Length: 152
Image (spheres, one colour):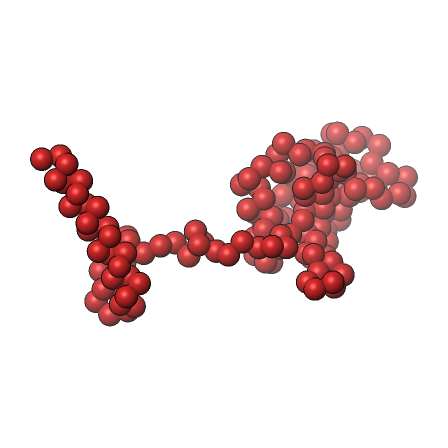
């Protein structure tokens, strides 16, 4: 009996999937919505071949230096946190200029950590770089500067 039930459930899921692709809208779409069978659009988002980079820079005695850059082997401050899969998803959203409040909260958290990790530094600058398409120069978004004295 258990196997029959599993077969019926699989048949039901297959039928819903076929109807979702064949018939768009109308009562089938309403049924799919009620049963929770419609796919999440974020789940099937196209892969971005030019993902955004999170760049964190530190000013010490008037000189700026990069301490973190996404997917960089050279600039690795807080890499275990910032290169984590979920964080890369968040940064990708920043590249589409979404979630500004989350970006600002991340900047404050980075400034607090930098104030502790780099006591000689004066400022922290955080930005999102979007690589240029077809040979264009990269574009920086949401360049934000934090005074580290405020977080000491």
